[in-house]
Image 1 (cartoon, rainbow, N blue to C red):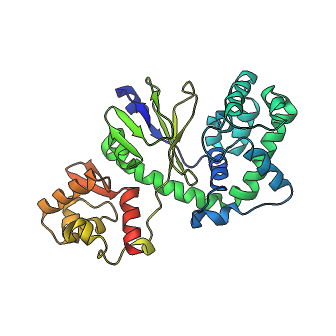
Image 2: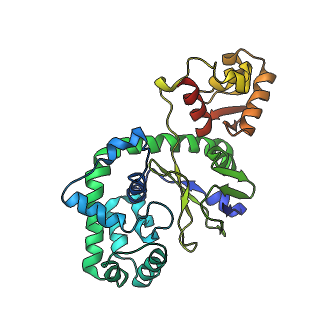
Image 3: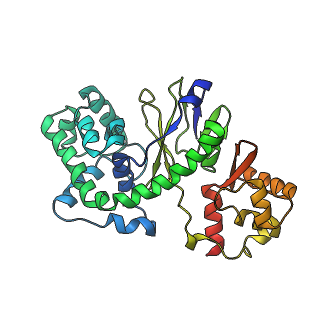
Length: 320
């Protein structure tokens, strides 16, 4: 488990990235290439390439194992501003950092022969690496970037709704079940046990279409960053037409309340949609919130409710 420790100053400085980060998506899509059961929504974006594109992918896969540690220098903060600025930052990585991070990677995975020249900061190898990232991105993610951005932006809107109306703590409650807010600590399901003390720096949350689960930078001295899987946006086709499957699990009334949650309704609107009293709607929303299916934020004199990613997934499964 990863435990992210917040202070009051950290909550003020916690923010959501402007959108998906192209270098993070590049690295995390390399993980998805090895999935035994690929996400159908992503599989078409990751078709095998040929020639230079295949060579670029081979070079990158050598630095990004199927699971576990990969070097932080592959995902510089400058990448949030675009591929070009990200690659400039990558090529400017200090030699000491290249050597240290590749040493960590080499202790856990076999490295190719050219890794030595990369660790030494040889300009030709750095240019080759940057060129591989560019070739892979242009041939794989670039053509699909508008769709990737739309998915990330839809998730970002969900988080910002909670942030604007309820503050950072309300937003942090929307990330369950893989991320649980237990003040003043964000508990994150993680493959290793570690603590991250923000120490007043705040936390940058980055939505990703390719992340299997939340992932943070390994070096705690770098700006604290947590990349998380986006919630699949609900569409008209996702709206369940029946709650027969959920009823035995939740009860007919609570299933109806869950089903009525599209569009961030107030408690009054929720009660009207579900055909229950105001007090009953409030009670059922509280139970669903405790189960991680619903997030609630106060807006002026009203409370608005929204499905969490888990709640949305449960409804989609019920429809299927």
